Structure formats: C-alpha cells, structure tokens
Length: 307
Image 1 (cartoon, rainbow, N blue to C red):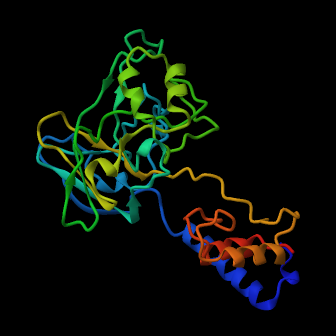
Image 2 (image 1 turned 135 degrees about the vertical axis):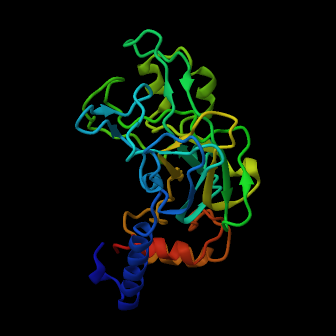
Image 3 (image 1 turned 60 degrees about the vertical axis):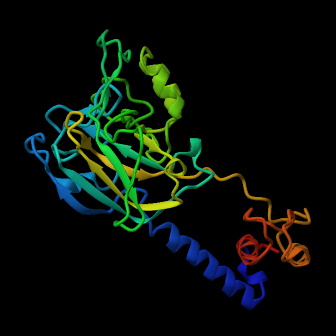
C-alpha cells in the first residue's frame, strides 16, 4: 500500500484499522488460559493432579527424554506434566480469555474441542489398525458466565477422537514430525462410526489435518456462546484425563475483491461505488459479507487502498 498517495485523514484511518486488527488478533488464545477450579476427587491417578497442565495447547510429543513418542492415535500423551486426572466426584473448570461462539463458519458445526488421552487399540501391533479406542469418559458442561451451566449430551471429555500431533509422523514415531496438525480444526464427527478397522494412513486421511479431540456443537445445546468448560467424573466410567480445550477456528469464505470497479487499483473509483451502495445489502461493496454496506466495509477498502 502506498500510504503517501492517500489523503492525510484516510492514511490515519487506515493506520488505526490495521492497528486494531493486529492487536485484536494477538489478544486471544484458542486454548484455555485459566484454571477456575479443580477438585481432584477420589481415586484419580496418583501424581496426575496438576490442573494447570490443561492450559494451552494439547500435547504433540510425550514421554520426555526417557521414552520420547510422537502423539498419535496409538500413542497418547501420558506424562503428569501433560494431562490431569479427575477422580470420582472430582472436576476441573477451565476458562477461555474470550467467548467461544456458535459460528456458522466452523467446520462441521463444531465450535469447541476437548482433548483427553484416548487412544486406539492395535490388535495387529505394530500394524497400526484401530481395533476400537480406549476412552475414559467425563461429563462436559459449558457456561457463558460460570454460574449457569449446560450439560453437553452424549459426548465424553476423554473420548473420540484420539489426539494426533503431526501430519508426517508414523503411528509409533519416536521423533517429532515437521508438519503439526491443527488443534483448532475438528475431525468430521461422521468418522467416529467408521474408525474401528481403519489403518493409520486411512485415519490420517479422515482427520484431514485436524488434531483430534471431542467436538461440541453449541447449537445442539441451544446457547450462542460460552467461556467456561467444566469436566466432571460422575463415577459412571473410568478416570478421565484432560489435556486441553480449544476454540475451533472458523473457515471464512473468501472476501470480495475491494477493487470494485475492476481497474486494478483500489482507489477513488472504488470508494465512489461503495458510497453509492452505502446502507444497502450490496452485494457490491459488502466486503465483510454481513449483508450491509457500512463502516466495516469502508475499513477493509481503506486497508487495501493503493490508488
């Protein structure tokens, strides 16, 4: 962008827009940032009682220096500095630093991911064929304000899908890969019913770059947004372990080209067309796709200004 070619007030607005975009993008973590409460319960795995390990990203490498392993559907995270165990009657409550919303652009409608340490059994070891997966349950509840809670039906915190840390690490790899999976991308929920019997390569195709986790659609619960997640051991299963939670990243459709008049330059002609369309539903000039040509569209045009 040639800022010197813009009028002074336009340059100032553009700078403010860019500053706001940069600051807002760096302010939020896609993972939990706070442990609100932890009750270890009874009969949890000894030593696995550090709730802060559930903050931040899920685990990609486990075993430490003693027994290094890439996290795959056949090698889950297992160190006490990676997962926290919840005994009977216990719970952990985690918080995001922002609201996780029911976003229509989230893949498969999934808005929230919960990562445990479930794993596939391998009846033909080391052939890496999923003979079913070992999961340990855990009730999931969500809340916007930390006071009113909503139960997530029919899903377990420590369940499908097993975590995968790398796109290019084998099922029993002992070194990290070079291409990490996306822990903010969900697996297609339809894969769960077909997981048993799949080999490692087919599982990776089904994951399609995602890192696993239990996927939750807030629309199913009937709430538009949450900020808190509580995972509880109600004694109906085994002892769930929690690695992390994640806000799913939306996949936005491509934005319209701000070069509205098609002359190869974003400049005065485009601004004129936008002003003509101002206050209408577009589509010409509706750069943010919200159905209204207004201030945010002008901001996007000014950011792209080069004429």
